[in-house]
Length: 499
Figure 1: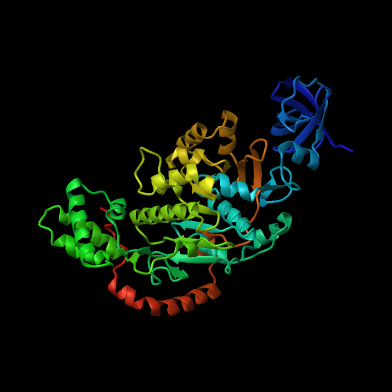
Figure 2: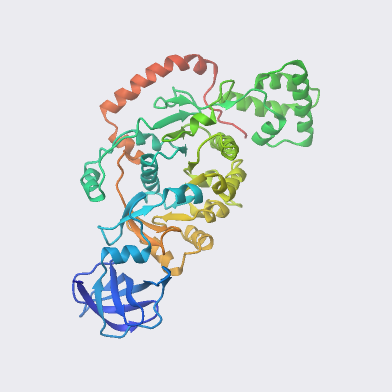
């Protein structure tokens, strides 16, 4: 028996209708109305007015025809037609919601309908998470990462601020633990599946598991040119120096290049030496570089925790990683995987804002990566500052609250489904709710994002207990012994890198 919630009255159009509320109804709740020509039509309550008679306005979503296409009714509804609460099966069938996959949360307004995304869609067709600061973008990203780890999908996470290391630990929030039953989950840490790399050293990042290093042996002119701009005169000095080194030895380091360049009689050598020394001082180059095959493994998430690294060095690291994983994936050396880029506006900024050495390779991955099973998860609190070509290549969009006019305009220009109604919607999305657009779902929907199984990095400082501190201190002491020699001979990350 269907539950009656009202009767159509007042304004009736092809896209929405008003009804007098006869029973309790909430905003974002789904309703259905019978139409003689088309059968049951699905709608969503978008506003409620408390007056002499309580009225509500519902947008018309439509119905599925015999081909399975979502259609709009051909005629307007008649007044006095009854409005009923939509049942679970009808909502799921009409919206195209799946019954399994990557669990993002619950359909807003219906706590009994889970929202799933297809793992293959995320990895093959890219995804973006966009929101203003503090609206939950990193939290939502953590939910997706947990789900992908549960499916044993390989993940490589670019983490500028060290937010994702807490994936290792189970969620300790009492408030969120109470909500877990509603989402059918329980607290869980992923320590056995997460490996944290630091481009610095263990004294700077004691919680890291391994050092991240770039191959510093036999650097070519092209590789060095990728790292910093050179004039024709400087290129000439570098070519001559490296060719002379190659004639003398089979293997050479950046020290050899600096020494040989310093022997040049050209005045162009000084700027080259300056750049080379700044790169050397970071300690990022090594004769034992991190292998891409170690970074991308089935069932594991590798986190590049760049906390403490200068912005230019972060861009350099992202550039080198992206370049190598793209080539490795094309050659089949690593499995299909998801590349997570947090603070994406720093690594693929929109033209006109700033430049980043990592921009071009990320644009290439956005446009071509799906052909090779290389998926992107792009995360940013400044949609207007992210390259619009990268955003537009993301087939799945997860948008939390956005209020900045420039960011809203950028979303409207870059996303096909955005309308003036959607612009107003994302301004007032409540905390914990996201607007989701996905190829497998018939239309954008609001999702009550599920709570995380693991701890959220945004509150790590407040929640970090004695037990955690003791664990990190023990790990730190072990690693400090191995790192002492390195720390002694290398300075902290160069503050003037590439200035």
